[in-house]
Figure 1 (cartoon, helix red, strand yellow):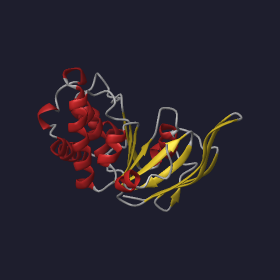
Figure 2 (figure 1 turned 45 degrees about the vertical axis):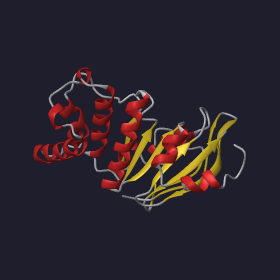
Figure 3 (figure 1 turned 60 degrees about the vertical axis):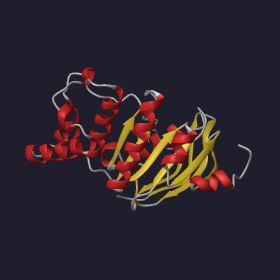
Figure 4 (figure 1 turned 180 degrees about the vertical axis):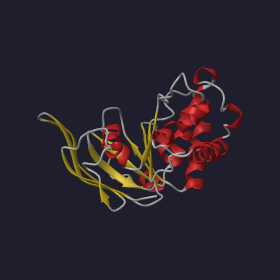
Length: 229
C-alpha cells in the first residue's frame, strides 16, 4: 500500500489546458472517488496517475517516489477499466495469471495468487471458462481478479461499472467496497455516478472543467457543499 500525492498537476494539448493545477493528497489505504460530469478531466487525471497520459507540469508521487518519468509497468499500480479488457482466447485463470507470467513468476506463486484472488471474488468455479461464457458481472470480477493478483500498492478504477445494468451495479458496488475493506489497498475510483461516489468513498474529489470544486467525506459534501455545482 502507498499514499498518492498529486501536486499542481496540469495537462495541456497544444495551447488548450484541460487540467488546471490540481492538488490532492490520498492517504495510504484510503478509498478516494473522482466524480464529475463527462469531460471534467477525471479519467485523464487517473490515466496520468497510471502513467498512460503524459503530464504537462506538476508532480505525481506514489509512496515516497515521484513517478512522473516512471513507466506504467514500474509504478506498482493495477488498473480496472469499464470494458474489462479481457483476452477472449484465454481462460479466466490465464487472464488472471497473465501479468504474473510476464514477470516470470514461478508456477507455484502464480497458482497460489490466482487461487487466492478467485476465492476472494467467488471465481473458483469459473477458472476454466472463457470470457464469452461469462456474464457482465463475472467479467468485471475477472478484471478485478487480474488486478488483485498483482498485489499492487494502488488500485485504479476507471468507471468499471458503466457497462452493467442498474441491479448489477448495486451488487458490484458492494463487492468493490468489501474488497477494499478486506485488502486495505489505496484505491482511486473514477465515476460520473454521484450515488456510486457517495456510497463507496472515504473521500470524494469533485471535478469540473479540469478543476477541483471540493474535496471531502461524502457526508461533508452533502451537508456543506462549497458552491452550487
